[in-house]
Length: 199
Image (tube, rainbow, N blue to C red; front, side):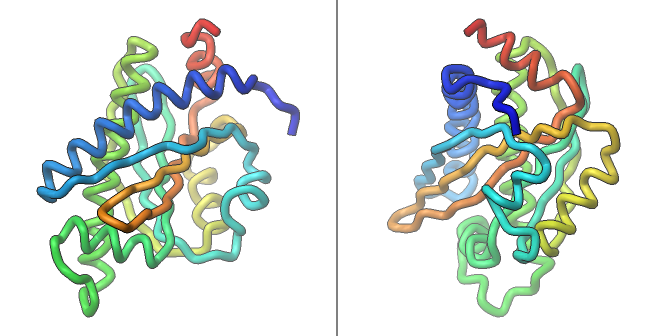
């Protein structure tokens, strides 16, 4: 894929996204009454095909939580994490061990966390662009990553083939939980975001 954005632009965007991550961590910490840190070690702009090569293979089963957003722009946020990470995050949200808990209950807990993360990122992006973006309630699924991405693109239709990949690290006591947040924008949104950085 031709590189459309410079490292300087991506670093500037990463700073904005880290603000969203900090806000999300604060909200989650208050909810669970425990100190949670959240960092964004990398932000990349990848093509649809490169997701499978660089992030997650298409035949890996994942928990996927999709939240559409509307406002001055439209698109979707897709939060993806492994089964093990989902168990730990659900346990954190529920304040107990999730062993023996149904997948539906775990999905509900992770969905609530995703809602917080998605809205925190959208607020940070909205502030950067001086626009308003509103997220829908998340929809959860457990499937192969390839099937998840394909179904998202079929549902959205005519969205940008460039995807913003935001790596998330949740730090809780001695645990580091990795997850990925995919911002799938309508055509033109990414260019406007980078232009707003003024770099």
